[in-house]
Image (cartoon, rainbow, N blue to C red; front, side, top):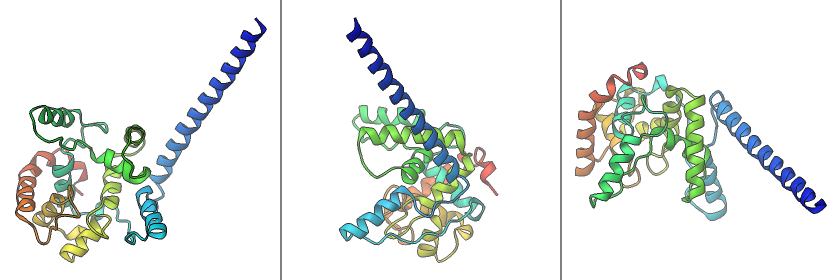
Amino acid sequence: MAKKIKKGKILHKWRNRFLLLLLSIVVLSALQVFVFGFVKPPLTISSVYSWINYTLMDGPRPPARTWVPLKDFSPELRRAVLASEDQRFMSHHGFDFIELGEALRSLREGGYLRGASTITMQTARTMFLCPARNLGRKLAEAYYTLLLEIIWSKEKILEFYLNSVDWGPGLIGAEAASRRYFHCRALELNREQAARLAAVLPGPHLWRPDRPSAAVKRRAERILEEIPKVALVGERLKN
């Protein structure tokens, strides 16, 4: 009897420690997301990983980055990115189950598995997670996606995405990509330039918006056709 009582106390003790650890993780991660919403991070987890790779493994040197507020990105670029990457961005809560269903249906019909990551999901893994591919990372990505949707506004999520997304070799963020490919600020992009930039996002290290292949041209044309569908839901992001 005494052994059972002692065992029960030990289990109770470890359960309390586990709950305390879980609560600490939730509080600290939520605080991390909250602080990043006000203090623009000089480095993301992805860029930290790149610096480690550069320092220890002689990888490519990570590019410098200048933070640009959302209002300094062309409205044409914002809409083109939404049309290309996440048309239901303004209406979903981090997970686009409609797009996920279409991706699974395409796979069942013998096609390839289409990407169904939302802009929030992409921002979560770029800002807070290392570039691993395992179940733990996927669960962490889903968790941070929920935190971003709860704590940040849609405008802030899109701002972080446009500043942190990989846009080609040595290019992080739309400002750097605009200056490299079109020799102008991201605010000055016209609709066609914006569509071409958005068109290369699935393969920024394979395609170039300033020298578009036939595939990039086709993607850009489809994005231009899709832009009217996101204009209304993205009206808050117009100016």
